[in-house]
Length: 501
Image (cartoon, rainbow, N blue to C red; front, top):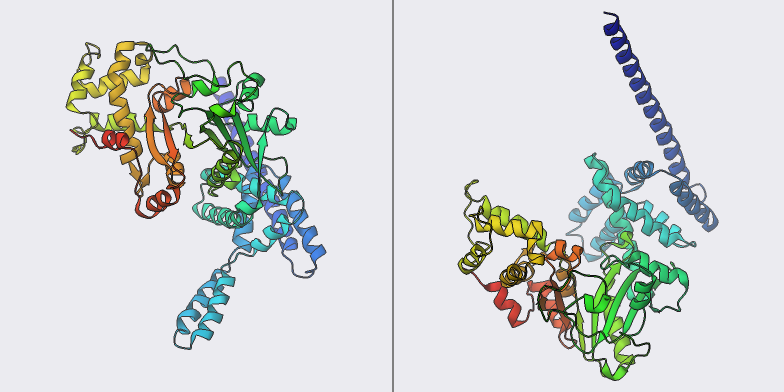
């Protein structure tokens, strides 16, 4: 009886503590909302419209925002978007006036349309322009948009999410104007470059992580070129980083470029190609005929959706042609992120099609491939889709030469299907493929055992792909892809991707 009373008292105190915390949180939230609202009102007050006043207010805005916790930043930006975005009643009224003016002549229509354009510009757009004019302002806006893109998925309120998305798009539209090729500076990074720039190249590398200083020194050393785009408003801050290898052929393996640790080669003859930089501190330009773009990284999340990599590749091509007159081949050696995930998903769909009453019109495996898999499947596995799934998820094939040989033709064909056939909204499903094809490259060759790091195996079963840039055809290829969804591919890829039962 006594223990029950103690238990009830403890529950009561716990409920009281939770209630106190809830009221305390709500009180803090209310106080912050009031403080933020008063601050925004002071920023957007029109009592003083001098240039000096605008500069002070934009600086105050940056300082206020920078001192907030991330949750408060999202609340603050939602308030900004709601209260100082578009006046929806004015937009609707002006739109009605456009319709009503259709028969009043072109001059009247043009004036009303101009008022409509003005009504569609959010109030905070001018504040963002003012922010961009002071030192560090452009970087502030880039980081602010990165905050929105990073945290918008955690916003449960649909209306707040829509307002934040609108604010993000407004900032993106401004950044698109400021980050055009005319305002970007191409810079080569070498081992002799400022330490902070070299360190940032290492920190930002997302495709093939840099392990140590020796690895970094190799990537900016002989027979390698590391180029970055910087912006005058963000000095010493790489915006895009492009790593290029200078070789005498189109490379099949990333290990020949990185010279990093890897799984033991599975087959004789699968050793990396000759690396021109091995034991060499001086480049022999007469051997350089090919440029391999093996890593391109956009470093600023706030610039997502703004195409900078295309400009960088084109400028680097011109730079290399100027430095090496004999160079004539340009190609990427690209990862295939998402291939294994897509493949497992398709295997599951084929496995469970009967259970959900679905008919698979284009089965994943050919009849001949099913027969091949029977020779390497476990005795307890009668379904070859299940056998393939087990091989891929356990990585059994990596260390077994005979299994690897069986899987080679199967996985190469399925990868060609993924890159060449599978689409989203008419464009390539794979984001890296979409990037290079948009730039006018040709889907040229899929390379077996090209990246046998654990990352490469998990992403793409160890395969990589060459997207080749034929400079005379890139503009036409890009146009056909973007307008007609046509993927320019080599005959080998077309044949592989088109095979059916």
